[in-house]
Image (tube, rainbow over all chains, first blue to last red):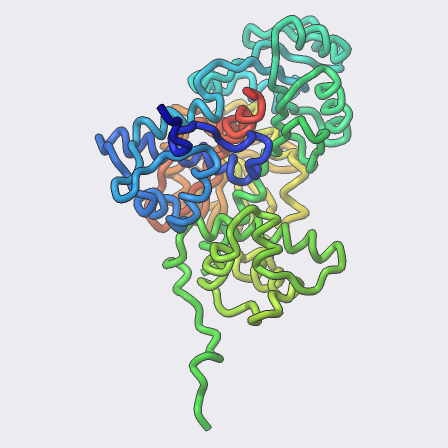
Length: 218
Length: 218
């Protein structure tokens, strides 16, 4: 019995996929979810492309990093592709996160109801202000920043959310990296950096405004 | 003397450009700025594509909506393209914005130092809490929500930033639209809608987390 090379499920090394392609996957997941809600079973790269305003070739190229999904002439199975992309993105589990900086913004983030339904759970918070350390915010106890490493290890925290002032942000990010955090969501208004293996995303309201002004000026 | 049709500067109707293409333009502006900082005068669609991990064809297609920029075989003039894209996006001027919802998050937004350097100025704030109305936050006076329309008209405010709880968000957005606001940045955790002509962007930290988990799970 011969093993057909076409049937292998081998995909590209995760680290070899361009970041920008990975960043587009959650968009694909949402568009697929909307197709699924409408009871659509199969979609073509043309249909996906028309929703996302990308060329079908770009869609096929993006997906090709992760394996062979589509069938020539039949398109993609909506449910199977959505499920597989969620698996690929690691969205089929719960992730523990910690918050650093329990000021105005940090408190707003702790009370943000959008994280939990998507599997992101803030389980711990840190601050450098002695007046705040030892208090509890929305059920989350606030520890000193010096406690980051032991708490992160004890609670299996993989994600750090940074809501400290700009001047303190890089130092806090370094602490999180040192503690073994793998992904950082940075709300501080600096374009923060983290060493190669650690992923960082900056919440960037300015970029959102910058594409809307296109419509305002006309 | 014949008028060469190839020399016309006519571009597509602004409303005919797909939103997703417009959303990519600020990325182009940033990448071009980084080329400019490094003293690079000309870039090819291949170089832009390699920075953004997009195919050169996609780059050329995106830019083609706005005119003819590149020269066959020479690429794009970095400075000229950046300047033109900033003009196209309306980033060559200052925009007045108002904030609705002066709670934890709203106060954090008012004190966010990232807006002003990019030409976005919060000039007014609104709240429904009588204890907050009439006060001043970081130099911005807080008015009642019923004052939105006259204040927006008086101060020439084009952008509304929404930081109210999810349950109040849609109603506030409707108020802003009624007042003539053209673009809304929504921080409330709902996928808010606005009528066709009004643009709305939801700040979406979950989507940022969703692409980072890709690297965590490996």
